[in-house]
Image (cartoon, rainbow, N blue to C red; front, side):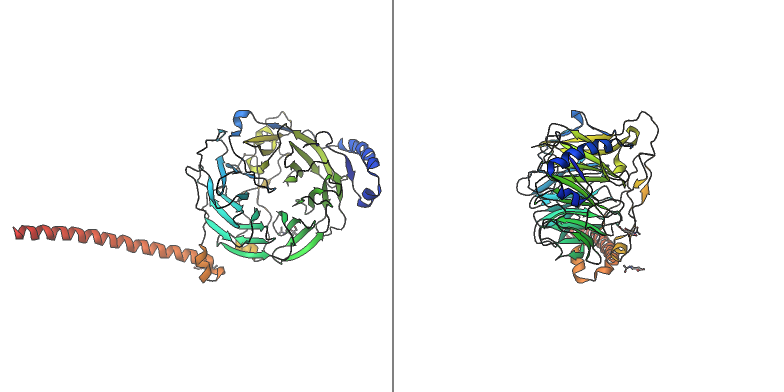
Length: 497
Ligand SMILES: *[C@@H]1O[C@H](CO)[C@@H](O)[C@H](O)[C@H]1NC(C)=O
Ligand SMILES: *[C@@H]1O[C@H](CO)[C@@H](O)[C@H](O)[C@H]1NC(C)=O
């Protein structure tokens, strides 16, 4: 059910005390007028509009997963769109090259190594061919996709990460450190992996007494914020295994919350009020006692998935089961979260993918692209700032996070931080160099200390080369011996005659 288009914006609250002391009807009347005044404010994003692509540019005949879990079911990068699908007797997702639009054949290859449904997928921000998946089979898998997409189904991951005792609902790559991956499971644990060695480096247990709804890295990946079924939002220093701030009942309703870090270190949350109205809120991450602001939206019941652009400070809210995307600009002036507009279509969304900034068409003033999952198709939606010029609009495109990592995994685990390495979008999308993901198999790690893993890997390669050389020389010798025997047999035969 979708109420959002009728009441896109009802109340605005900056002060929580005021909020609870004012009768509901007054709150709505006074603030709607207030809001109308405030909405008319200078912003280059005021006229951003959304547009679905033509039918022939959609991905059709896709049986989108029906599993009951509120993840986005879709992950996009400048090369591929990945979609979690229905699969009998296991878990699978599609990885489609972006240009592979139209009808997707029933026999199209899938990524199909999990033995139970896939719940979440995430593209590596530092390699457009690497994707991670979390599944009901309690494992995390990391996959390497061939440059031009799959020609046959892929059932062998590069690495399997085993450590959760229940289903894994969230996977999320570190934004700036290479090969660092986080997973959260229904065992209420967060594990941070060094994917290069296949090792669980940090295990955050006993922090969450209930299911973790969302986990978000801060801009430089030094902190995490989580939303949990116990209604708390927590800010966590993962390397110190410490909760640095938390808020009980960030939203009072029982339905799922979401919490994400913004670029300035503040935290944006969505959730439900005691009266089951959908809300958004903004918090300081070092002291969460009082919100910077709380706003009520509507009384739909879909979880609001936030997608955030740190360059423009725009948050896009996509309710699961809604048929709209609502977007807001966040500034440091009251009311802090400024409603911009709503993009609506008729069809409800089952999930949503969000393209990284480096995958956008800057010549068309495209500032966001979504991949909306319907029941049986995926429909790209393009958000554009209406401008006529053909020149690069540098005010719309501040330098953005590029594909190169700022740190190696070891550096991050040893306490170093680094913000994203920025690139200009002036020359359009900058492609990642093709780096193969090197994984040291876990059986090696079981017998050797982990810190030496890199050297073990080179040692193993050396060893392998040595064995291969020996094998080749043995084979050559066998061939030579064969010939010699053949010659001798010939001679024996001649002598015998
Ligand atoms: C990383 O971010 C934290 C806060 O989120 C900040 O205190 C710290 O200075 C940052 N470090 C670097 C190296 O960017
Ligand atoms: C790996 O070996 C090189 C020399 O071969 C050494 O300089 C380096 O510190 C070693 N790295 C680790 C992680 O042990």
